[in-house]
Length: 170
Length: 57
Image (cartoon, rainbow over all chains, first blue to last red; front, side, top):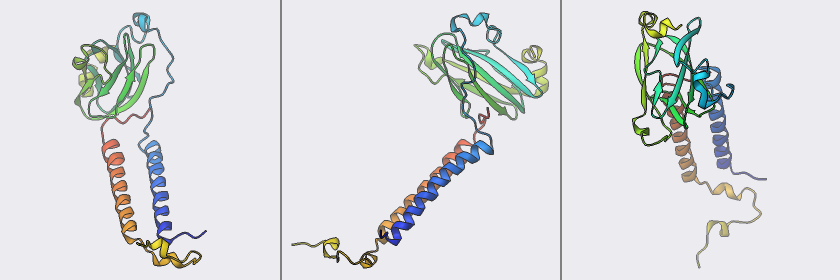
């Protein structure tokens, strides 16, 4: 089969492009460690969150050296706890569930973004940096007050975290 | 009656199409390629990985 020289060139371009796309996704997974929202968490009873040891009292607690877990409940129309207070320069695992309908959980302007489904626990782990205030919002239409459903994620200096409620429950 | 390049080309001449060099098409594909590469680098490395709170687990 005869292939024109130019056609060989643009076939090579196409292959390079595919390798570039696959290569950068691989780099993202291996280098910065980008992960997906896993389905590793089991199901829970959305109507009985007050009987669940993690979500009866939504909070932030220390689970390891420099590793914190935030248990967050989304509801019509807000997030609990609000604000979510975490210490700076730490690793935070967010466990988010809903007690009514499907919500979204998005830390505005960041990659921390997941759906929140009643009966399921969405788990995402992020590394927070310097003290900062992030906004939180629901990005799945959840009812008449959806547009007003928001919260805050406060990344505070470690000393401030230790002396706050978040520190006490650790 | 109009004649196209294809119609005028010898059918069984293997080297015949070398005379038909679509440099415009090649240039266009090169430009598309550059746009795709630049867009991908911007979207993935700058806009996505450059943002805060990358999900790592």
